[in-house]
Image 1 (cartoon, rainbow, N blue to C red):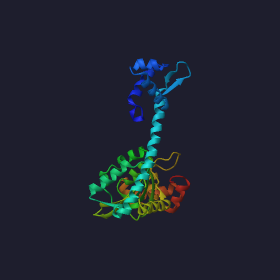
Image 2: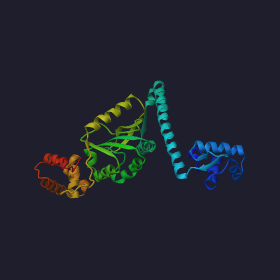
Image 3: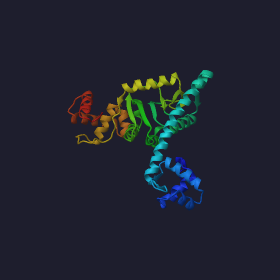
Image 4: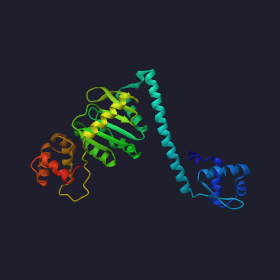
Length: 325
C-alpha cells in the first residue's frame, strides 16, 4: 500500500507490526516478522528516515510507530514536492529538447493537425496533461458544430478541480451564442478568470506556456485544422499577445446573485451583466430565451431602478453600486 510513497514491502511489514507491538526492540521485531536481525535493523533505519518510526533513548533501544495519519500525510506532502520539482526539471529538459530540435529541424517547431475530430482529440490531450495554466482566446468558429451539444462546464470543471488556473478572454460574439453567457457564468463561479473584448485577432489556447493551438483555416463555422506550436520565440510572442489583451479586456460580470441586499431582481442582474459584456438585444434574447422586445423592457426597468437615463449612466451606477465588477 505504501510503496508509491517510497516504502518497501518489507519495511511496511515492519511498520504494521509496530502498530500493534509498540515499544519493541530489534530482536522483538525480528521474531515477530520472521526476518533476520540485520534485515530488521536496516528496515528500521529506513522507516526512521521516512518519519514512520521513532526510537527511544533506552537500553536496549526500543521503537515506536509514528501515528499513521501524521506520518503518511507527511510522506504524501514530500512526494508532492518531489513531483513538483520533477515537473520543473522536466520543463527544462523539454526546453533543451525543442531548442536542439529547432536548430536541427526548424520545421519541428510547428505540427499541423487536420480534421475536426483530430483537432478536438489534440485539445483534450493537452488539457489532460496541463498542470498549472491554460490561456485562451475564445471566439467563433468553435471546435464543435453546435455549442448546445458540447458539455463545456463538464469538460473544464475537472481541469479547475486539479488546481489549473484558467484565464479566458471572450469576444462579444462568443457570448452571444444561446446559453453561452450562463455557461461562462458557471465556469467563473467554479474558478475560471474571464474577461471580455469586442474583438480578438485569433482563436488561441496556450497550455502551461509550453504548447499552443492556433487555427489555420476554417470551414463554414467550424475549425478544421490547427498548428501545434512548441516552445519557441513564436510561442513567447503568443503569450505576450495574450497578456497584452488581458490587460485591456473588461472583467466578465457573472450572473452570480449579489451577496448584499439590492433592489435588482435576478433577471435585472442578468441584463446588467450582459450589457457589460456588450451583447446586443437579440443576443441577450437568445441567451435568456425571451423576445428582444422583452429584453428592451427589462433594460428600461434597470434604467429606472438605477435612476439613470442612458446605458452609460447605468453602467457607471452598476459599478459604483457593485452590481458588476
